Image 1 (spheres, rainbow, N blue to C red):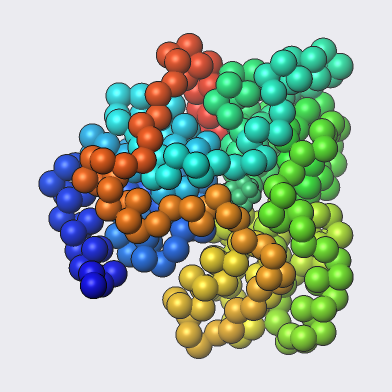
Image 2: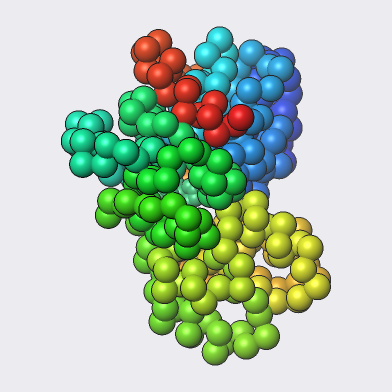
Length: 303
Ligand code: 13P
Ligand code: SF4
């Protein structure tokens, strides 16, 4: 039987031989993190995709992340590690629906969460991630913002930018939205000394009670830099495992057992192996006009 370490060693050899840069989202599993060239949240992965020197980028995450990498590095070959790994939120709004919505809010800047399809981005003014949203939204000249598709992230943002008027649709992350105020009450009772750190994709009833709300990297940095010893984590439960692995002196608990993104979990180490061998995954191909138009709102985010 082949051991994980043996497969990892083969992946490391093959990625060097075939000039592949492996980018892994923070929600990927530990065995994949160990062979990645870079691990990060969606903002950090976007920036890394622009500067990676290798000819091929292998994105271990979900489709919109691979599309963003392709848009930012159009001359590179970009592979999505598992073709079925999508983000359900990215497809909650069609281009046709967005065009109609824009007519209702003609004075609004259209701000898209990065968790959207490339086609949707072609109709947007600014793209944001949970890590970049606050700063980016404050800078835009328009006073009104149509924020798509995540109304939870949008409301969290709106509360911190009271000088602007926000309009939302009813979109959001089906994984984070499952967490409820009752989960917070139960976790606080079970772990009374722990701090609660949550992703802003959670509902307002959850973020309102948190000691910290922020992007995946924000949560990781907060836990690392805090003097506290115990944390309840309100985001994909892979982060509980990663933090526990990196900080055995601290304790990390999931806010809700249900907070597991099935799409993020689709990629396996064998998928990564097949991709670096040149046999697996899906090469991302986007129409040149889509890439050109979608890039404008991503560039607006990256500055
Ligand atoms: P981050 O921007 O924090 O990586 O979040 C992406 C995501 O899909 C969270 O569910
Ligand atoms: Fe999409 Fe939610 Fe999964 Fe993130 S956790 S990829 S927002 S479904």
